[in-house]
Image (tube, rainbow, N blue to C red; front, top):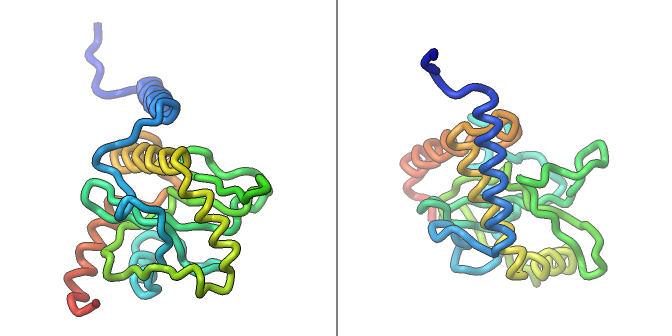
Length: 205
């Protein structure tokens, strides 16, 4: 019997399938990861400074830079690192199809209409100095933001967010799924660049 030098393609597919199965079982049971939480345990909207995003974009073109709306999202604490998960007002792809279920949290208004989404594949590591809390009442699209906020603060939606973040982060950072990695930010690289940026900009806030 020959010794195997490493995992085969079949092995990797089985590993991915088991990882996905484990994820959905946890989601169904309502579990969450202890090391993964919302900032201050609350859904709040934050804007990320343009200069910092442009800096990250130099190293990873998957960082959201061009958009019809401000770069607004929610913040999670993941393994002692803060990440902003951006909102998009374009919940469907350009071809009209839905985005990848594993990397997207769809947002619906009170009428059950799909209005936006959280893009976990585009989340970026941040220092809180580069983030500004959004005052919804003062925003031009206040009603739109309120609809997003109302949906996202539901307990079952928060569980979905945390579990999807945990799953995507683990798969991408540890190279478990090349397809998923192909449309996600390079989390490890951006974490390293975030540390460098903080050293270069110690005066900020």
